[in-house]
Length: 117
Image (tube, rainbow, N blue to C red):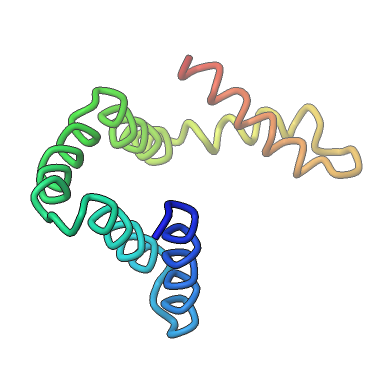
């Protein structure tokens, strides 16, 4: 089979898995795995090497450590009353206008973003 026909076959398999109500992530993983192993001539060794090295390389990135720390900072701001104070401050300035609550929420988010950097 040529590469194009393999691609169409794998895509049809992906659609079939989704028709059987398999979650999309799992269906894509199965279809991609099957296609990669088929294109490697049925050899599972390269695919298993990828499965052991790529997840660590992606998750050991410094950029991902910022996410839980940012969530922790948000919890500190909430429990410390910073977010409520920011909202009250901005609401005092523009809360009387039409759509003022929405604008106050946006302003409080902008203020929190300015504080965070």
